[in-house]
Image 1 (cartoon, rainbow, N blue to C red):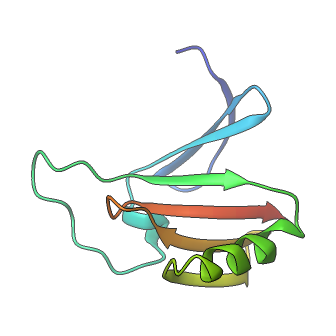
Image 2 (tube, one colour; image 1 turned 180 degrees about the vertical axis):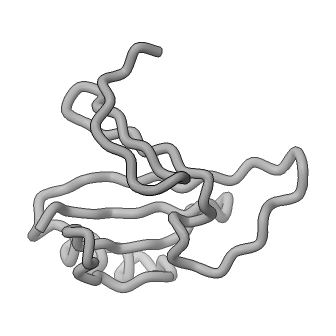
Length: 101
């Protein structure tokens, strides 16, 4: 796909730049943060991450909670320099809102 390589983190994590976005590919379920079982063969399961401005992580959490969306990972400052928020979509995929801190 000729994407611009950004960085790798360990054996199971690689990042590419796609315009102003970052595409992360990982072989670890939920980036290794949540105890998950591997989906059955043929069952799709993804984790999508969306980068926002730092003040938006908490604002997104408030909006999701107001909409009765279950948060599975409250806004947290991570040791790798991101503030993260995790929840699931209706198909049970894990979605992440994060900001560089």
